[in-house]
Every structure is written in structure tokens, then in C-alpha cells.
Image (cartoon, rainbow, N blue to C red):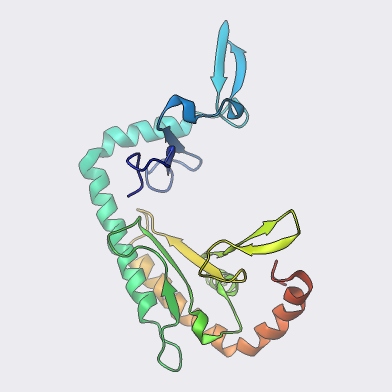
Length: 234
């Protein structure tokens, strides 16, 4: 559960453009109580003959996202969003199952799925290349190769930069600081035909990465040795 039943949950945010069917830049946040909203994030401005608190980054923002979101709420309703959600979850399951089925040359799984599965999370597929395989490439390399097929599969490093001692620290206790991952957000405009093309690209790119495998070791080693796993050479 992730809601206000948990005492440490002070606010809940959601993306209006990813799952609310609004335009890019639309989102909302709900606080448990007024005290949870720090005054330091607000700007008190004199506006239209009075004072008002603005919680936007630069005070004046376009209202198109709010109008589109309001229209979609009325246009789609509960049943409409429920239908869209079921479609997104079905396509996410299709991709998740396809990723699970990809095997290394020795029969072991190529990927490890990180998300909560087919019904316990959003329509987002999250995984990383199986660390047990000792591959010379990582999920950032996967992102770059997928881009060659016109797919942007976001790769992330599971680490943080500690400014106190300039060191790279792991984000999770069960993963090293050089561990990477990727995610795919399945939106309503992604049809099954599009998802089939994405799965095909995954298979193709994995084969390309295997064929180019030794080259990645020489490509990344100088950079990682110099920076201590802080970045990529490409």
C-alpha cells in the first residue's frame, strides 16, 4: 500500500500526462494536511489586489494542462479510465512476459524483472540485465542500441553522488553502485502492434549487444577507471 494509511506518507503525486491522458507537463500532488506543505516552496505574491501563495516554479504557468485534464475527467469518466488502464496493463504484461522469455546463450534469463508484476503496480515494466551473466555491457548500452531502432528505453544508474566525499554510493542495499536498470512506461497510445515491434527490437538489440560484447569492455573501462563508475564513455 502507498497511501495516507501509512504514517510516513505525507504527500502523493501523480502524472497527468502519463496516466491522466492530459498534455505534457500536467501533474498533481495531494498533501495529507496543510502542515505537510512547506512554506519554503511557496512564493507570496501581490496579485489582483490581494496576496496569494504560488507553488509553481516560476509563478505564471499555462493552464492548458488543467483544462485538458478537466475535460478528460468528464469525457472518459470512471469507466473510460478503467478501460484504458486495463489495456495498458495488458500491454505491459505482454512486454514483461516477452522480457522474461529472453534467454542467454547458456539458457539463463537475460533480464531480471524488478517491478511488482502484472497486477501489483502501474503499467510500467522495470528490469535490468541479469548481473549473474557478467555481461560486458549494461542497461545504458541497451538504451543507446534501442535508440538506433527509434525506441527510447530509459536507462538509469542505481547509485547517487555523495558531494561530501565525491564518492558514488548505491541507492539500494542489495545492488552495487555500478548497477543499472531500465524502464518502459506503457501509455494508452501504445497498441499491441507497437508493443510487438518493441519486443522484436529487444530481441534484435540483445543479439547486437552480444555480437559487440568485447568492444564494450574496451569502450567503458578507461572511463570507469577514471571516474570510479560515475559515467559512461558514450
